Image 1 (spheres, rainbow, N blue to C red):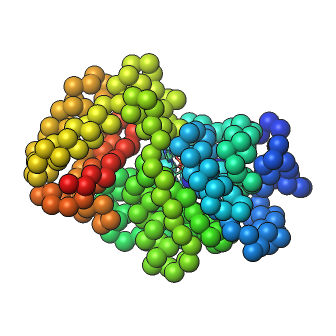
Image 2 (cartoon, rainbow, N blue to C red):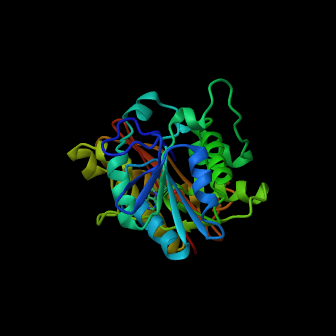
Length: 302
Ligand code: AMP
């Protein structure tokens, strides 16, 4: 989640005053945000943490918050702590001016867009140990990623003090880790999960999809197709995870230019791999197409 806004056309979130575009207010510093929120209480505040480059997936989180809360705050912060690849961080799409207008249209009241310096002081920085969940699924391939997510999400929770926070099921491991953080630290807010928004061909909508070439875009729904394949096999009575993984990996392998990072079947809350499917499971996978890493998952109940 996250991002300092490098180039801002019409707004200056770190300027002397908070600024407004249409109905959405943009705030760049913690002090200004705290002062602004103090005036709001006791309104019910909904928080939607994002890294910007807003799309239909983010809008569905914002709309849900706008329906359920009196005031919806969206954070836009490209969190350097959660990137393990400098290029990925440098190339992450950023346009705060466009995001602010889009967030307002979707129903947000305020955009919090701090710079990296505002949130992450120079020198050693306290991370958060999220326990065993950190080492599962994507954590095996992205060491430190979820500790970086947890550090920044907990900062947002402390700065904003939301009543509710909205997270997408597309990033299932992140969602489970945030729920654990809230529970274990008695943060006293409600974490609301929102289903994945997809393109008509099933591809999960992601800010990274714009990096795909025409051929890559054509091959990208193979991950969703593999999830559907797993679902069908389970509905058909297949219980052996190993067999399902082998069959679904073939669906992906058939696509030229697509590399499978992992395809797993695990328990949805602990993310521990399952060998024999007896109850609900999470099917989760990651593919790489060129430099682009795409992630998707589905919870399947027998
Ligand atoms: P990001 O900007 O990628 O960090 O995402 C911010 C929030 O939006 C996270 O809670 C994501 O899980 C959620 N999100 C991203 N893509 C989608 C999608 N296609 N559908 C639903 N939620 C999404």
